[in-house]
Amino acid sequence: MMLKYDKVALEIEQSIEHKQLKAGSQLSNIEELIAFYQVSRSTILKALDKLQSRGIIYQVQGSGIFVRKRKKEGYMNFLENHGFSSDLKLEQRKPVLVQLEIIKPNAEIIENLNCQLEDEIYKVERVHFLEGKCYCYETSYYNKMIIPYLNKEICEGSIFNYIKNSFNIQIGFSDKYLQVGCLPKQAAGYLDLTENDPGLFVTEIFYAHSGIAFDYSKTVYHYQNTHFFVQSQLS
Amino acid sequence: MMLKYDKVALEIEQSIEHKQLKAGSQLSNIEELIAFYQVSRSTILKALDKLQSRGIIYQVQGSGIFVRKRKKEGYMNFLENHGFSSDLKLEQRKPVLVQLEIIKPNAEIIENLNCQLEDEIYKVERVHFLEGKCYCYETSYYNKMIIPYLNKEICEGSIFNYIKNSFNIQIGFSDKYLQVGCLPKQAAGYLDLTENDPGLFVTEIFYAHSGIAFDYSKTVYHYQNTHFFVQSQLS
DNA sequence: GAGTGGTCTAGACCACTGT
DNA sequence: CAGTGGTCTAGACCACTCT
Image (cartoon, rainbow over the protein chains, first blue to last red):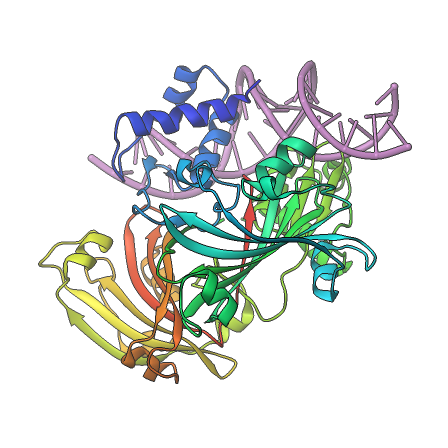
């Protein structure tokens, strides 16, 4: 059963979409929303907070609830580009597997996956494409204690979906570290670029809902084929 | 008067800090927090939600409330590096003003600041330093209709604090667009780098709490002196 | 001052985790 | 099954905006 506030949030979002409301358009006030959706004030508030945190609307005390500007076309949501996404295009992507092997962890992996020296670690190297263009080269590490099995076929699809469906592990949150640099020869080759071309280097640790780290990844993004979008909120 | 949930959130955060709790440490359960802080359940929940969205804690239904890993030293929070920050080091920064002038807006500025062709626009070019190292070169645009006055002295401090204090404009949210590229000659000069070195290019629009765009900025970050950190949540 | 969003409460009941 | 977080309600009152 879907939660009430998620249902309300979804319906409000769809209503904005359906009515093609532009940025700055005012929505119904809270009393009307309560009457319309037949839920309590707190439920409406929670739905609105969710929409606000996703950048769909903004609320102004004493004034009203308004539609926020939509992101430009062709930009990926930087906070939602790894299994967090509901974007259809991303679901359709088919990564190319470069290498899949089992290794022993080095200090860096032990630190970030919070594992033991004697654990076995899956190392997965892949190149991702979007609309025919390669946009990143990614090296991921998974602890075999947590993700007991991986194969070529799984790695050529969404590993996140596989993990979610097979082990009932839900993604809870992630830590990202980013910096810009020059491509080493190997990465340049996979991205169809030249050594020392610029690149965005992102190191990311994904945690399950329960707080355990299950994925440590290092990704290099293609500087021409990747454009990101991020929405910030105060509070 | 400080809001109750902000007060509770602050105290919980300070308590984590004070007790030097490590990642994964479990906090008191909700009933105990209610009893300790003498507030209602909803107020505790709101405080916890705020701490969760800031990456301080994570909550696991049926299990408990836990401390989340702190960010590494030397990384800037990508979502809080422009006036959003409470980081002391950032408050102490003194930007160097390169140029301050009043111009007529081009199509791009009109689009992003939502202004008129005949409006007057402040154009501010600055270089920011952190611990003696330049880390970005920034060009900002402000509509004189909204920000009626700027001078050299103001631009050599925090424009955001000035705007906040002088015009009672609160920052509400922002849209960021980012991509990687090669530095043009001018930017390279300001950043003490060489033409065609890599750089992180960020275009950002800041909106007041009321929803009006008041700052349109284009920033180039120094690829060696800037390391960013971002925390994502799954709603 | 009318309208609108934000805070806060008390309490019932649901859903998940772990032993 | 005990413990713990999550959902939802009804209602009172506060704070801000705008005319």
